[in-house]
Image 1 (tube, rainbow, N blue to C red):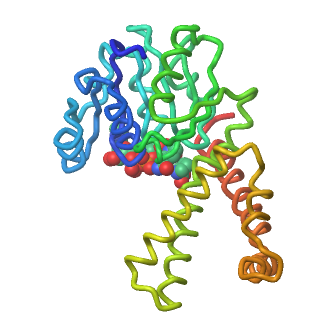
Image 2 (image 1 turned 180 degrees about the vertical axis):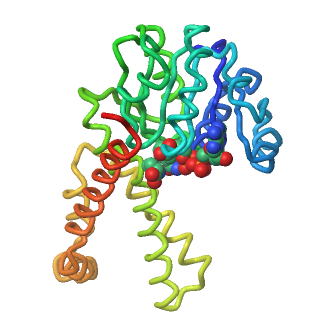
Length: 276
Ligand SMILES: NC(=O)C1=CN([C@@H]2O[C@H](COP(=O)(O)OP(=O)(O)OC[C@H]3O[C@@H](n4cnc5c(N)ncnc54)[C@H](O)[C@@H]3O)[C@@H](O)[C@H]2O)C=CC1
Ligand SMILES: O=C(O)[C@@H]1CCC=N1
C-alpha cells in the first residue's frame, strides 16, 4: 500500500468517517490523512476519535495532498469542486469523488480540464473493512493514480473497475444504498423475534449472527445463494412456510423496484445537479 501518499478528505460526514476509520484500522498512518469539515462538533469528533488532522477550510486540507477525496453531498459538490480545482491541478493530485449521481463530465468541468478524476461509489461497511467500491477513471488519470485510488479503497474492502460510467447508477442502487436494505431486514426480523416472545437482546443477537453467517456462507461457497437457500428449506418444514409468505408478498419485486428507484434517483441527481 502506498502509505506515503497524503490523503485529504473534503467533508467529514458519515461516509468519510467510514473510509478514514477503515484506512486507519488497515494500518494507514493517521498522520498522512487530513479532513476538512465545517461543522465544529464533527470536526472535533474526527480528530479525537481517529487522531487525524482536521481543519475548517477545504483549500488548507487539499494543499499538498496526492489524493483529494470529495466526500460532500452531491448538492454542494459544484461549489466545492470549482474552488478546489486550481489547488488539485497545481499539485498534480487525483480527485476522487464518492458522490452519488455526479458525473465525470461535470466534475471535469468544475475541477478544470486535464484534472485526473476517479469517480467511485463506496459504502459504509468500509468502516469494518467490508466495503464494496466500484471505480471509474477519466482519461487524465495516470496508471499510478488509478493504483493509488484502488489501493486506498481496497484497504477498506473489495473494489471493481467498471466498464462504463453508466454502470455507476446500478452500483449506487445495489452496494451504495444496499447496506440500508439489509439493515431494514435486520430491524424487521429482530422485531418479529420480539413479537414471538424473545427478549430484544436475544432477538438482535440471533438476527445479526444469522445475517453474518448467511453472508459469509454465500461468499465462501461455490454454490449460488439460491442453492444455499434450498438447503435450509426442508420439504414440509418451517422455512418453506416462511418463504411462501415472502414470495406471496413479492419480496423479489419489492427489491427490484427499490433498486430501480435508487438507480433512477442517481440519474436524476446527475441531471439536476450537473450540466450534461
Ligand atoms: N452514506 C453513505 O452510505 C454513502 C454516501 N456516499 C456519498 O458520500 C457523500 C457524503 O455522504 P454522507 O457522508 O452520507 O453525508 P454527510 O452529510 O454525513 O457528510 C457530508 C459532510 O460534508 C460537510 N460539508 C457540507 N458542506 C461542506 C463544504 N462546503 N465543504 C466541506 N464539507 C462540507 C457536512 O458538514 C457533512 O459533515 C455524498 O455525496 C453521498 O452521495 C456514497 C456512498 C455511500
Ligand atoms: O443515500 C444516498 O444518496 C447515498 C448514496 C449511496 C448511499 N448513500
